[in-house]
Image 1 (cartoon, rainbow, N blue to C red):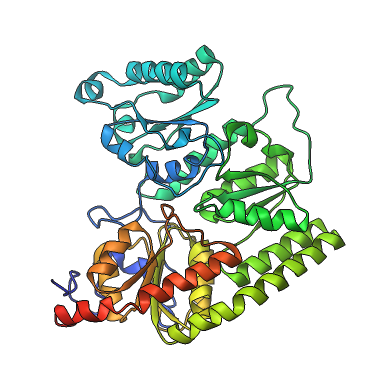
Image 2: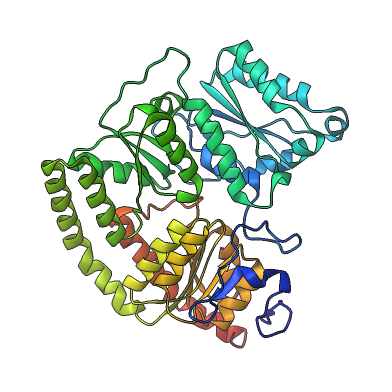
Length: 460
């Protein structure tokens, strides 16, 4: 097995075009570049524009998600998220127009129209999302016109999602495409009135491993109802009631801040950022939500819940801390809110975070991240595999938290790995999730398999 770093030699160990996307806390006073497109040829860990749109919209359970493009793009469909449903499973089906060379030459609009007629007639969905892909952007199909015609023909929402990959080299552009599609879906028709309620919307919550249900249980216990989540375990009908909420709480800020801002502008719904990963974050979020309502009974119930849950899980986490204190961790995830939560959780377990990065973090979010880290920690935006490999080895990392693309790399290097990606099946939110996360970190970090692996390959 080859363990030499595959980056070019040099003091920084990365190619020159990537220098501004990597900083070391305490040493580099310049601001990290995090809005740049991915560098062509660098095999970015960041996903494409279509992926960004798809992961946001896919958990809408009763809609059809139709990928307009070559069949290869549709591989990014079945089970791409660990989002669970309490009813319809339509969202887990794969639909594609399967564009061929002939369609590229003569245009794919007739094929898209025929596909829409077929799937709507067969499945009778309440809405269809049509995703454009790189090829569609290149040949110039007018999916807006095709969707409009189909919507009028069938009397349902057929919404174009303009997520052609060539729009940008940044997944966050796909988030925006999904956000615009959501706003089109929930905007009331002329003359339609959505009654205001005391319920809240939960934005940026995708019900991975049933996390939405867990947080909803907490909120119900303290006297607050969830109107609809964007988009975990949501339906088209539920999303259309979103304008009736009194508050939006936002967890995944990268995918949902634009939606929250527009819900505030159009419907006067205020929003606050929350974070339900880790016991400390969960307690803080519940307190701030309760404070928004200003009801003494809600505030009292929130404190009772927090006290009870902390008393239950604190001794368990303390047991894991004894085993993990002094271990070194790396984090590379999609959004910055998750990175912030993971840094706090790793530190609560007595670990030192020595490498951190995200796919879609914003400037102010990176400043928050840097403020949580010790001097000398590497912070990297839009990393590529060669960079991650070098930093894992140079910083002598014991465990990495990341997604499916980082898992194989960590295992190859004999490093523990915890899945915190959108395709995971474990619930890692709330107080119960904090215990699950600590257990997973302990099991993989302290596994004897890494010692035997490194001995068999002569050390790393």
